[in-house]
Length: 575
Image 1 (spheres, rainbow, N blue to C red):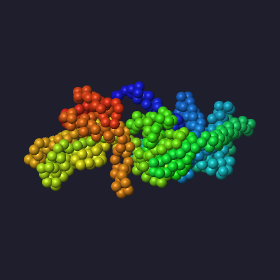
Image 2 (image 1 turned 180 degrees about the vertical axis):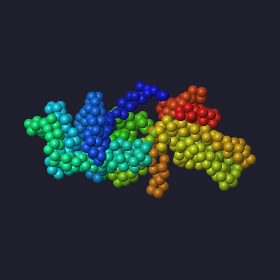
Image 3 (image 1 turned 90 degrees about the horizontal axis):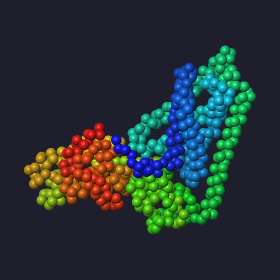
Image 4 (image 1 turned 45 degrees about the vertical axis):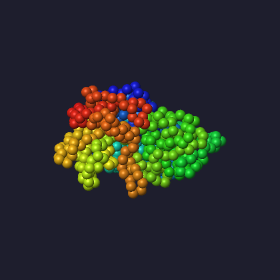
């Protein structure tokens, strides 16, 4: 086990923002929805099954610690939703993002009366309302009440699914899990609505009997008209208060817009000859949205990725200081040391600004990420391995071109076989070298162990290849391997029809530098200490070195391996 250092804990705290708090609260509320809707789905079996499921559901969610967490999450999530209505300066009409807050802000208005009747009726008047009483009240009130109930179910579920989609679509497993998640997202509300329908039909059929009414519609279950008037007054008061909060948020937005106009305008130059003028207070990404300027943003401006980053041209000392969340994201991609690199979704310039975008968008507007986020880029924790063949230049001087290509291809084939067998993916072939990636379908610890295993297999395969070609080669084939792990951006890079999937980032550059260092350190492989730590294996027996990597300020601890075949034993330690 690798214990979290104070620095790592501090970085995690810096990465926790209001958006992460809202997401955490949303996950709690969505868990409640899943539980509640599955309970509704039991109506497809019987009312008795619904009542039994309700006992389990209630017992869990009314357990004091769970109930406190639930109510706190509901209050915080609703409050942050109102705050987001005020804070967000720009919504794009064609994007899916505006739909989520609209649905979310409508949910409290739709469920206040239901929540008051179900929760406060028991607290204030000791009423015991179950599915029989609720369904009778809804179905007896006419079709409008029934359709409103069904609409509430769909709105709450859709709002939660959109939020989960924006969160999970950047995760490595999302593409493979998407079909199953879609099936679940469709089945649960469908079964819940069918269960409510079947339960309502059963209640209305049974309610014709006087015995049923006497048993289920007594004062102990539904209360008196006076008690219901009290509950209605409370619900109306809460509804009024919620409407006032929404009105204040909208009014505050209008007031801020006036202040923005009076506060002056700033010019944003995009480095391609285009310049726009926007009020102070807009983020660079919001300005791009407002003026339909192309700007990549995979996460939609939530500071969950770095694809919207910009590089400021000129003096960057006058820029507002990065927020903790922005600093966290930039640190994750190794860009925190350069003050000219900022996140467009977080930077709100107070003076004229000129910049260019390292990640060019693949569409015509800043919301283009919604169509195909994987083509623009994803942030992933990957292990990068560079392998290079030694002496190929001298070999080419003494052989026919075809013979040289044959040997190089055999070398790359031996390397690729080892990479694939270990769970990695050959990515780029440059001359007699190759970049391999690990972690595209595995967790970081597994990816690091796969890379170590691949290095050992590469050494074995190349040894066998050298033995096979010993009559044609004056000496065994030499090679160098560099391995490092970290956050990178993966996506399709190139131009028009010449796009290739690859990885970009500090971890890839470091792996290339380590591979090059194997020449001066006279070893077959150099692996960063990060790889061993993440893999959970002990590498104390390997020589340790603090090396300076070009482009990095602080030195890095690495392990030099004279014979890469020795990594096979280490690779199995963490299994």
